[in-house]
Image (cartoon, rainbow, N blue to C red):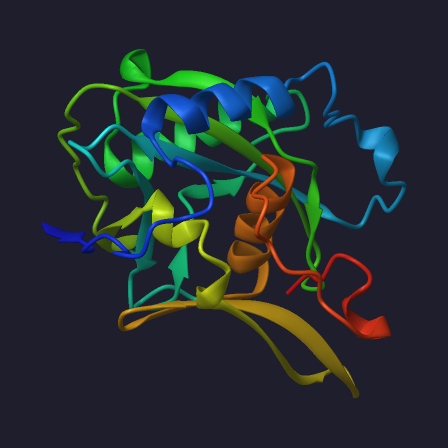
Length: 226
């Protein structure tokens, strides 16, 4: 199994990024009472419903977020970096259940050890998905078990890096005949882009990182999806 530990970012951040502080912020700002996953928020019935988990880990002095490198043989987004997640099995499967099921199936996390903290706003991608991002944490050591048909490696990125705006930038590509902007998160040799990077930006903004930059220009004045 490939388990990649990233070294922590050295400069002192503007806020104290500890496991307990971030968990508290998520509980306060990502409550199900304030963030709805109701289908009525998006009337486009052609969108495919999916869910993903931002899993926060207590890891010595450096709390981390779990990402995965997708297997090279997958039909969609092969070899890319993503959050654990996948499509809803049926219309009556709760999205929280979808996220936790995929978390267990893809990387073997025991859901009994997982504490659900909250949720981020639904994230609509330009490729036709409406993703429900769940935020959860584990405070105990995790014995990962990779589902090798879907996941090649697990990447533990220190939260201080996820919350560092220096790792983010905007790019664009030609999509269906027009230039389409999207977020990119670059850290070490990892390039995270599109929907996954957009959800990370949503996480940073939602918990209120005080030093997060404001993008200038009309193309950055809205949420940007993959």
